[in-house]
Image (cartoon, rainbow, N blue to C red; front, side, top):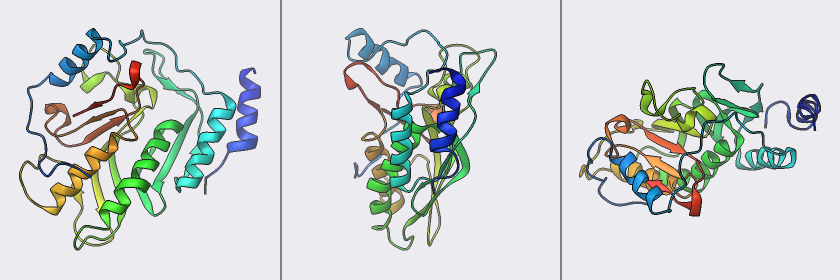
Length: 245
C-alpha cells in the first residue's frame, strides 16, 4: 500500500477523537546502574542488544486500527495526527496519536503524542491498576489526572549530548510526574523510602504494576536522572525481558 493510500485509509477509518507493591521503595543505587543491569542482561542473552538507529516503521493497517479500537474501549480519548520525524536524527513516529485522557475520567496533562501501543499500555495501567488503587486511598478519592514530563521528544537517553536514542524518540515512552485525585492533595513522584504513608503505598503500587503493561519502569532510586518521575516505555527485548527498577 503506498503512502497516500495508507493516509487515506487512516482518514476514513480512524480520524477524529475517540470519544500492588512493596511497603518500602527501593533504596537508591549508584548512577549508571540501570545501564549496567541492561548490559549484563544483554551479555547473557536475556535482553536484546540495541539495534542500529533506523527510520520509524509504521504498523500494519489492521494492527493500528485494532489499537485505536482498544483505546476507545479503555476510555482513552485520542486523535490521529500527522507523522512526526527529525531531520538530523532517526527519531519519529509513523502513525502517532495525541491523547488527552488515559482512561475514563482520567486526564493526561498536557496532551501527549506517542505511538498507539504506548497509549494502550498507559490506558491498561490506569484502568486495571491505578483507578482501583486510588479508591483505597484515604481522603483523596479516585484518580482524575496524570501529569507527564514528556512523551514523544527527539533526544538521547537522559538528555545526554551523545549516545543511544531514548525510547521517547520513537513514541515508545512517557514520563509520569504526578497523580491528581478527586479530593485532597496530589501525589508527586519523588523518593519516599520508609515514609510509611498512603502516598508512598500508592507510588509503590503504581510503580510495581506498571511493569505488567510496560517493559521498562524506572523511577526514584533507579538513578539520579529518574529521581522525580516514573519513566515507562514499551521497548521490546529478546525473551520478553523487562527492566523494572
